[in-house]
Amino acid sequence: MILRQSPQALEYAARTISSGGLIAFRTDTFYGLGADPLNPLAVRKIIHLKGREETKPILILVSNYDNVAHFIGKPSEIFQSIASRHWPGPLTLVSNALPELPEELTAGSGTIGLRLPNDDGVRRLVRACGGALTATSANPSGGLPALTAEDVEAYFATGIDLIIDGGEAMATEPSTVLDLAGDKPRILREGAISREVLDETLREAGMALS
Image (cartoon, rainbow, N blue to C red):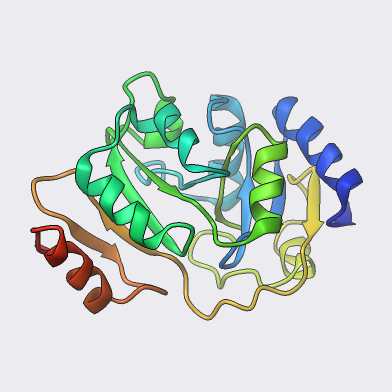
């Protein structure tokens, strides 16, 4: 089912997520697959749907900074510094996960990636669904990103309970992924925010990329 984004669609999405279902929605980059990140069975549905390796952690979108504490406890100073500079925005920050998080979410890595999207409509959707949603890309593993609701439907004839049509994704690059879990920050994926920009931000905070 495809529904245009609207208050009614958000209510439907919230009910779907709370009952353990899956949705697809436009994020601030491409279309993503949404589930309750604290529901192991729902997260496993995404892994099976995508044909994804179970060794890869699942990205989470949060609706505001306060939701970060539900996943990584007390953020480090460098996490707070980077987030204050680049959130909301296309930067996924990886940090040490709370030990009680489902292994389906962390893939046993002990880390979790979070992003606060730079899109009011996306944040409203995430807020309606409890403040946090998975947002791994809505395509089979290794496939091209989905840019429209129709792209998602073409990829997945079954398995998704609701596709929210938020219009065509205008992003040309995925989010940049910055790992802050180790001794030194390192870029796991360079995307919309360049290495040069992050390097400058880190140097201002007295750190450097590994």
